[in-house]
Image (tube, rainbow, N blue to C red; front, side, top):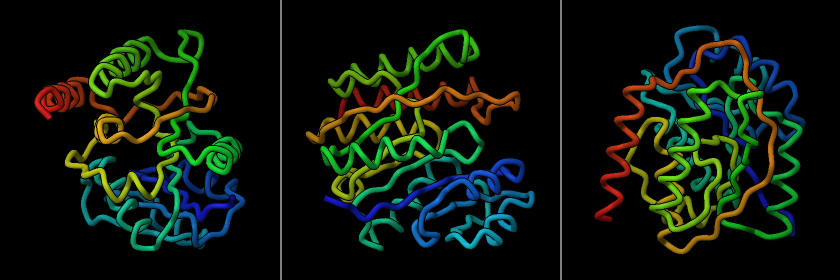
Length: 222
């Protein structure tokens, strides 16, 4: 059964990558939504030239907030699924077909693109962070989650309508998993490539760790 699918890309100062990514997405432009989270470079200008839908925050509010803006748009436009991918070139657009195939075959509620963790293809600090957060998310969601930090995932309209997100940064992806699992929604995964560029991650290790710890503590009593 074919589903109405939206492709959501949150971006912040991605003028180096967003043009190439949008060029590679061979899908209807009205179904490709870029949320520019207050970029100060040429990101918005490049996106507009590609003819896809641009939603723009006047200020930088956080990746999670950009996702939430996109999710509201998806629900309002009656999309069955949203597939999220990052705009920094670390997600292979060809692998969208893996998500679409899984959606049509299983209609799972959340399908997470899961990377193969190894020091050969991932910086040590990112490897340790991902393993730790995935363990904690698995603990609180009562589901085995191998890659809770993956921003490459498919999310059903059912989840978007029922899960109330309150965070605004990188912990939002974990918040969604925990809350969706606790509401009884089904989680699954597809294998994806592990791609890292030489550019510095936008994650702020200390601050984003504190934010994740706060999310974990709140999850104990909710």
